[in-house]
Length: 150
Ligand SMILES: [Zn+2]
Image 1 (cartoon, rainbow, N blue to C red):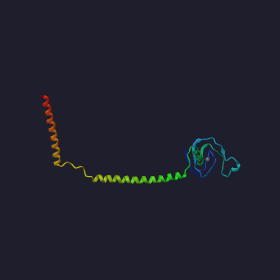
Image 2: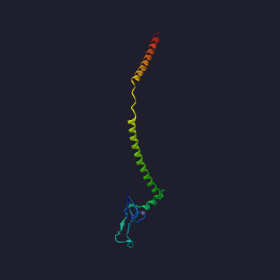
Image 3: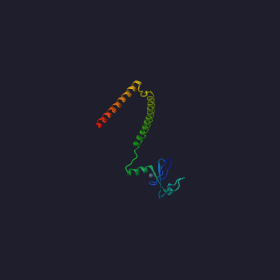
Image 4: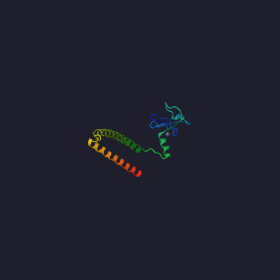
């Protein structure tokens, strides 16, 4: 299926040939009539033409779509186009802001001082606390063993 613009094909439904309309070639074989056979409509350059592909003009498509509740709403189409442009602009803004955020996070990371290590005094206190805990556990184990032995 493809959209045909700027080429006045014969519509398989209304048999019209309108240069200003868009057509959809449905890529489907269709056993239609031969048009432009009547001498009164024959003009120079107009030849009889067999309609053997399902091709619909946009007006017929709109009419057909109306049967299933769809319609051509040009105001809605215009709003969609406008909103699409607004969204595209917002996407660009978001991309720029995300870039700034990444740069600021990098700068913040460079400014944040590393976590300080323990001073020698703090290290000594840390070791002493652990030593006290170890002694308390050992004393408790000895007391338990003594009580068990009786
Ligand atoms: Zn048509």
